[in-house]
Image 1: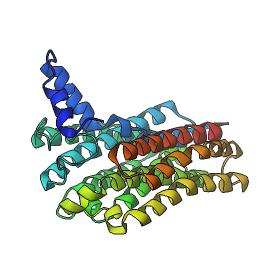
Image 2: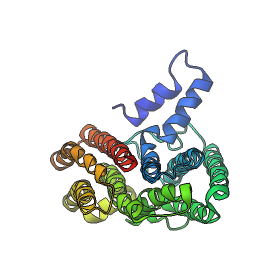
Image 3: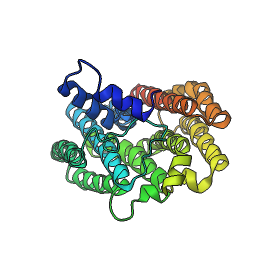
Image 4: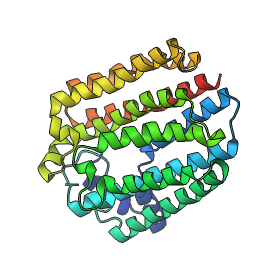
Length: 312
């Protein structure tokens, strides 16, 4: 994994690389494409439930997917520029390079990107409101405000140990239930229940991310939940979220509260051992980045299997 400095050299100073390509790579890096499955999974699960209940609408699914991804990209852009402003992205940071902190993109450019992404989400939201009523617009506005308050404003709650709650609520409960709601304006109990393990797995991604950045966040005054809890308690929280998600998937399906075929997602539980064990046994950057990748893939594939099971 290249350091931030070497990543910048690769991005901006590669011989023969055009300015257009360089800027494309900069925006791609800032968008953090590898995080976008966090927005896609809830939409897939909601669509799977709608298919299983024979109320699926392709237009609603498409608009929900575009809106969810646009909000995720806007959140990533806002995080990039806000962290740079507050000076929390030092050169010792283990994660992917941040474009504003490294001077590749200006704060004005990044905020323009935030606005464009929000406008795309707004257009998708208007389309969904036409299909499923004005409630979707209200949810969308609240989601955008919450996203901007995560790292922006006078007192960003992402710096107060509340980021995990935000992710669980908006990328778990709200995203999954609303993705089901837009198909026929109903929110069955199965949508609420499946939203819980979806939310737990995506929250685990943030926990692993903050665990990786614990030392640098503490030094720069960014009080994430990992900083507040410390390493040992954060490891326990991570294991609880990962393993607990699969326990709930089994309980809900066996009890008949969610479609029985969603039980197939429990077959992915053995793949939860890898990221949990890595977090418990390693503290170096490459290992923790590997745990993040494993966690992201586990979240994506669990969502796909849950969606397929719900659709049967």
